Length: 100
Image 1 (cartoon, helix red, strand yellow):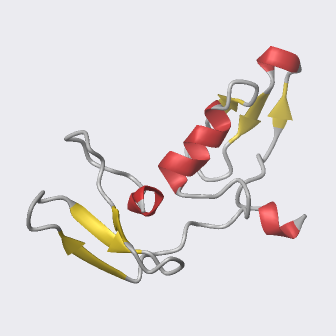
Image 2: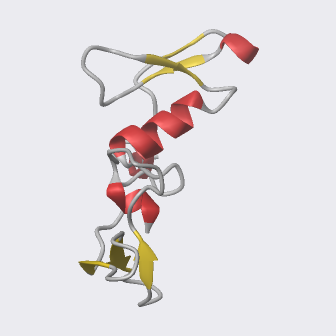
Image 3: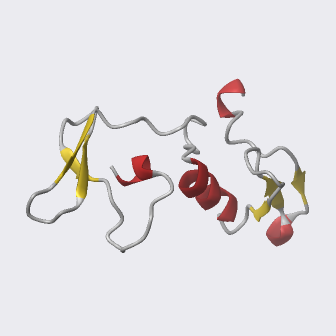
């Protein structure tokens, strides 16, 4: 499937619980367990690649800071609602598109 090229591991090794996938985006190379979803989490939260489409998450239509909470919000292109676009934890976000 060409659509999943960004999500598909470069190489796979091991079987069962020891099965690992090689991240197609990391340099130096990084092996992640597939059975416990480490590979899925890594691609989603480190690189912003959807496991469903194999494509990067879509950018928000617009962004703003909520005056009451001081939190960043993004305007969803699909539902046209303002969605929280910032981790509730005081921590940098690697892929902000995940939060909206």
